[in-house]
Image (cartoon, rainbow, N blue to C red; front, side, top):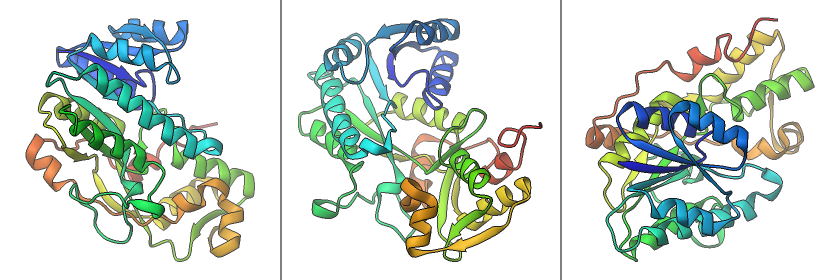
Length: 299
């Protein structure tokens, strides 16, 4: 199959490109620069010039493909709501290029947008209406494509997709600890984060694309729910800093834009995903990965 991948040089997307090529697929990735194009070429993929604001370029990339994997997202949290609405338009543009066929589109969403404080399964839908999470726009866009007869599916990723090169929430926590001199959790830190290694995520995307069915929702979960305090305990030990509890306005002040994420309690299951796709995570878990030179390189 010829697969068009957005976010092809990103942390997860680059692993997906390698996985697809290793499985015998032909890959074209969306790139904005010559440097990104060279990176893809070295991986054995083709480059398609464009960016997330150029919906025509996205449609052209999808038109020539047998399937599309959409992982790109603007993670500037100062314009988060606008970025989520932009993703809605991006997904619509990608889907329109696949109309009239059964060619699959995989859309990326997040487990963290789902209702909290229970074990979340693939059947749980995001909250709608006035209390809907902004990122739910991506799932809403995928559902809208189903009504048009387009073979759209959703891959939900956990708060931590980890591995060498991680620049997500966990490295942000490490940087915050270095700046503030403490490693904080909210309350007693018993809120739980699911997690997944980037290479296991790549295999999930490949299998989900190869066995695509309209309306499928897949969970990328290896660690179902790690207490947040276990994450901060490793950071505190590795940095030789105190581990402290914070709450309310103090937590908001300490974590800033990340306060809501630090308090998330979103344990999740991938039981249905594993059974249907035959997918089993094989890489090491978040705590073992975190307690390594990948996150704390030797000076």
